[in-house]
Length: 72
Image (tube, rainbow, N blue to C red; front, side, top):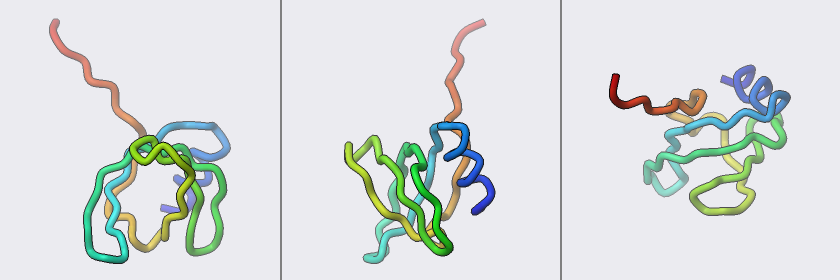
C-alpha cells in the first residue's frame, strides 16, 4: 500500500481511494498524493477541495483512477 502511494506521489498520478475515517464513516475519494510518512500521508482531496492527512491503516482500497469508456 505504502509503495503504491510513494509511486503515485513521484509520478503525480491521481488515485481513487475508499477510506474509513476515525468516526467509522466510509467515503470514496479522488486524491493526489503529496507526501508519504511512516503511518500517514498528505494528499489533495478533490471532494473536499483541500489538502488532507490520511492514516494509511484506514485505507480500505486504493488504486489508479480508471477512465470510463462507453460505447463501441
